[in-house]
Length: 108
Length: 113
Image 1: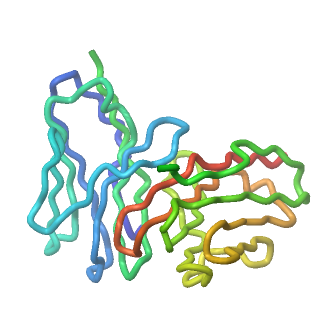
Image 2: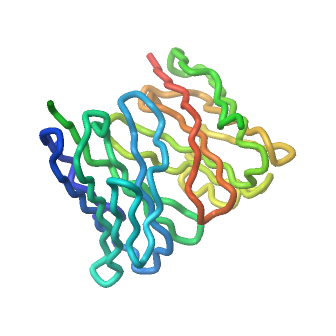
């Protein structure tokens, strides 16, 4: 079993839709969590950190459930420009492990 | 502020040849990482530096891969000799600390033929 697992998708949604991705992790000692966005043939870019109380950044909401060992990313009012691969990252003692990503395509 | 700078962007080499990648992290970022990313997968850590010290190189294939970070700033990653399976994107990243998010460079796309 991988340390960090994501549904690879693809998720194909119309503009304006709400879409959610989940990510599960196996190490209960994990300390910090992030979502990255990666466009095709580009490097990953930090989208947002994930805090225990949940956090929001515009149309994006991240949640952490330590008991069930998963994090989630919710995107509201999807835009065409949200099309990308979303990578879940789990950090333990300075070592970050990436999931393989979930691909989102937003269509007109 | 300049981001993480990597070179070259692309490299095509024949198997058994050596290859080197260079990375200049964001100024003031003490932590530097080398990752390898294969198509359709997430990045996998090769080595992590705190200043000039390699604090995690457990995933680095030491028979053919080596890395250094002299003076705790720039870093180079070398493969010698390269194998076909080394074809991938090699990403360098830096961060202020071990628990903050990373900034990645644009990567080096290596093709071994």
